[in-house]
Amino acid sequence: MTKSELIAELAAANPHLPARDIEQIVQTIFHEISAALARGDRVELRGFGAFTVKKRDSRTGRNPRTGEIVAVEEKVVPFFKAGKELRERVNHQDGTES
Image (cartoon, rainbow, N blue to C red; front, side, top):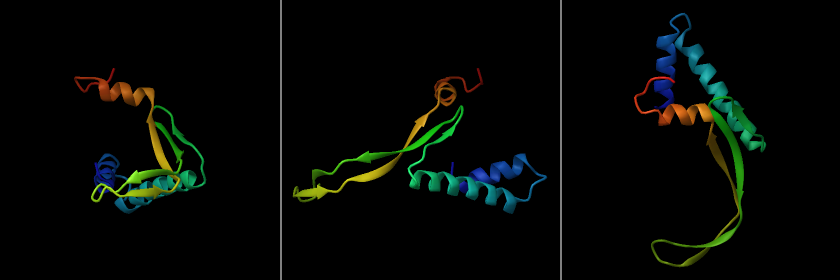
């Protein structure tokens, strides 16, 4: 699902809200999650999962085209861990809620 599809589904489910308001809400949520991760904070959405950042140490790697050894600098990457409810819902075979 893309962001525009999410906005369209939310607009269909909430006809009393203008689509531009729903788009602003979605943009604000994504912006706040991104800002929190940029600060190094953890974002937890109960029943859905948690967004965190993980530090990857510097290392040596290889250029896949040439095989040349290159230095890969340390970096911080976003990480998502699914919550129990989400994992159970995704793994439930018939698509109905338990």
